[in-house]
Length: 309
Image 1 (spheres, helix red, strand yellow):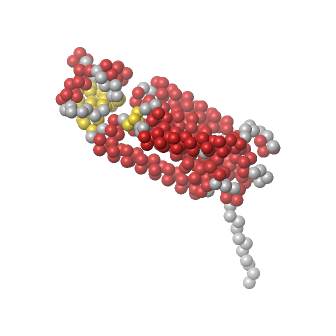
Image 2: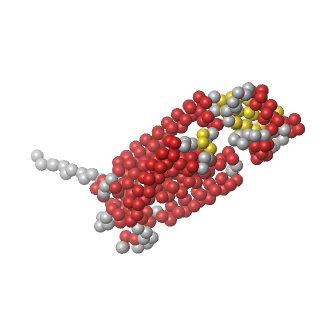
């Protein structure tokens, strides 16, 4: 066809029913997985112990983690606190242990006597803090979904809005399902990754929607399937370059960023891969199922002004 003269001619919409069916099955399976298996919530959500220590010189976080693992603290979260000499250690809740016992065990694990390590503070964080973070995190996701739905509905049309929000929910659920299957720790950085994924996925959908709207108006002889295929093919090179460069950055972050950003990187890598698929088969595919047409996007006709006396 002449519409595809200068772009690839891949018939994405030929598999739209299969794509939507697969997405539906995966979404239901993920919801069941999250209900019965749940997520591996980190200390940010479950509460725990915060320990701040000061080294006489700069220290590598991997060395601190190694000492803690040998001392029996495999789930410790270690990060710098201001400088490379000050280290903040977060531990799971300590059952039937007071601050003196926990601090002595931590200092013993770190070999504090030989390393001249100073204990700055130790705080116990109760589970009620985690519950508050969970509620605020869920509220943040809800507000993001509602805001994006309103934006797309005002900019395009409600059928596009339903498709876009469905794709966002789909992408977030797939990322959470992956984290649940492989029991990757879910902490505040992971929540930030899910929120970033929503924005990333929405941007990809908006690019395709913009091209669909332009082609529905300009290509008046093409049906809706031809227009959508044309729009996806026109944005395909841009999408491939964007996804590959994003995945390169995230892979580097995963391999060299350390344990503190591990779950953040994993969640975004999975999300970017899933967003590539959902922007084609979930957002646009669902809009087609809802009956999007050229008339939905045409500007309203101006009524003729009656100038007769």
